[in-house]
Image (cartoon, one colour):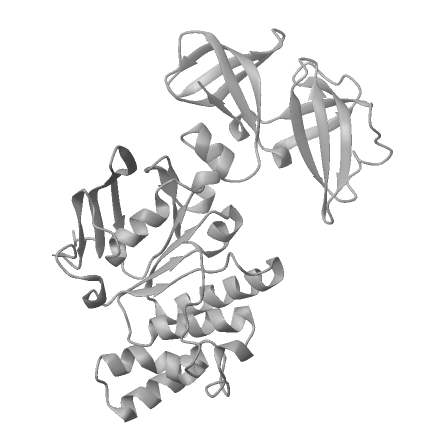
Length: 359
């Protein structure tokens, strides 16, 4: 079996008594788009900076193609980097910005000119080579920064929240461009973001960071459908948690009751499940079925507290008999929404395999 292209082994970073990164382990395939996703302070950017050589780890090792990187200074690692701020040289033209890392590497004028043209085509900015950064939009400047980072064909490209300064529409446009460029170049990309939608749209796999550790790593569908921790369940997609009684658990599946009445079986359970006791039931808003009235015995009742139109779907906020909030998302025009009003009593059902119990 071949060695992973990039390996992170037991990386830890301490700032005095504060541990920013706790023994992170990760293997990255050549050509993979891997995203570090997590809230501020979760350790994702610190891990990226250690990879780039901007920070030294307290312990651990990083190898690229079987060779350790830690003894190599950042400017000699030959790793591309794109930051949140475009970090373009304001006194240089677009072409000169892209050419800069090539000239530092003492490439010939013919090589530099050819590569600049190639990069401008790649980021779809042909004809912009003589403009200054101040004459370009934020999205165009970020494309230039991306072209500059790729101009010397780095084996790995690191991107630290590169789109967070852009508005939503422009951010989505550049996300599409980044995806296209990755597919076209097949460069290995490690991408940092706190935006789950961005991570899901761009990534082959996602490493979810929490409090300096990786809680879980997997594809977007894997993390969404099978979260191993409550943090991942909350951070990937929309979710609601309501209290339930754990009646029994066996082989990773739980039997629960809601309000001491309705019993649900064969629900995936996570955490150290006690023989019985209180637990939290996680439900996805789009996986809940809504009906009118009290309904059958295999569901539970709730009261509508608010209805919000969100374009292609409608968000129905409900409150269970125990006073807990639970969201339901239905497609616009769904028959269950017709004539629905605040204060109406509704019946909610869900499939056990679409739910999770966390202890």
